[in-house]
Image (cartoon, rainbow, N blue to C red; front, side, top):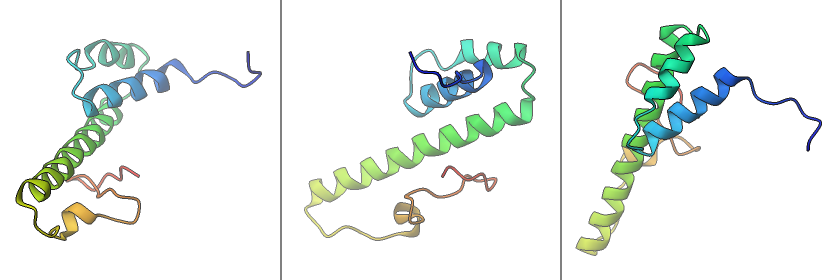
Length: 100
């Protein structure tokens, strides 16, 4: 066992909610939503986590689709701002939330 402190339960619930959304998990994070609300996490913070997770999921889907299309068409990759994003590989959400 490590002497390091454990993550707060609300952080674990946020990470779980975000990863469930980003991975299209069938449970859709419903349990985590209830937990976050019971911990008193403000709705605007929950909404930000949901927005970021959906953005990452959608961006990953776009990149996978582009890679598939490239292989299917055997053409040079088309460069676009949406696909290349910033140096870290992500773009901000519609409301400007950073996912990096």
